[in-house]
Image (tube, rainbow, N blue to C red; front, top):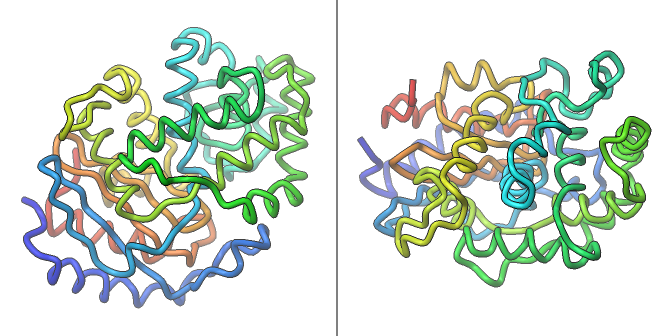
Length: 309
C-alpha cells in the first residue's frame, strides 16, 4: 500500500505537527539554533519518479549524522569490508551518539559502529584523496549523484559553527589517534567531518537518496548502480540497528524501516523495494531525533504498512 495523494499526506503532517512543542532545536551548535521548531515536512519518492510531499519541502536542512550513511558507503567502496571493519565495529550501543565511554572499555579500542560519532570520524578518515578538498568533493559528488542534483553544496556558516564548537569530537579523534585508528592531523579530520555534516539539501533530495538505497544502490530511473548492492545492504543494516541513535530498537519495533536521523531534524528513510522518504522537523527529543518526524513515520508505517518486519 502506498500514499495515494498529497492531501492525505498533509493530513498526517498536520496531525504529527502537534508534537513539535515536545522537543527543542539543537542548541549546542549555534548555527542550528536558528531553525524554526514548528517546521515539519516530508517527501516520498517512488521508483517511477512520482513524488508525494507535504509541508515546506523546499526548506533546506544540513545532513549532520545522516551523512554517516554515505561516508560509510564511500569508505567501503574505497577500502572494502575487511579493512573498514578492522577499524570500526558492527555492534549497536545503548550510549549517546557522542559518548566516549565504550572506547575506554572496549578491547581493542575501536568504535562500536559507524553511526556513532567516534565511528563516523574513523570512517571519514578513510575517505581517499590527497587533500581535505579532494576527499570532500568525492563525498559530495556521490551525494549529488544519489540525489540527482548537482547543485547540492554545503553550508559554510554551519560548518564554521560546528568546527568552532567541536571540542568533544576533537577529544574522540585524539583517543582514536592514540590507539592507531586514525593517523592524520586532528584539525584536518575535523575540517573534513564538519563540512560533511554541513552538506545541505531538502526533503525531496533526501527522499531520492532513500529510494536509491531502497533498490540496493541502483537508481531506479536510470538503472545506474551508484553504490554496489552489497554495500547498500550493509548501510541499510546499520540504519536499522544504529540509525536512530539509542532509540533504534524502539524505532525498529514501531516503524520498522531502515532510517538515519541527524540533529538538524532530518530523517532519511528507505522502504526496501518500495520508496525513499525524507523528513525534516528540527524540534528534537532528548536522544537527538526529530520528535514530530518520528510520530509522523509511526503514523505512516501503520497506515501504509511500511514495516519490513
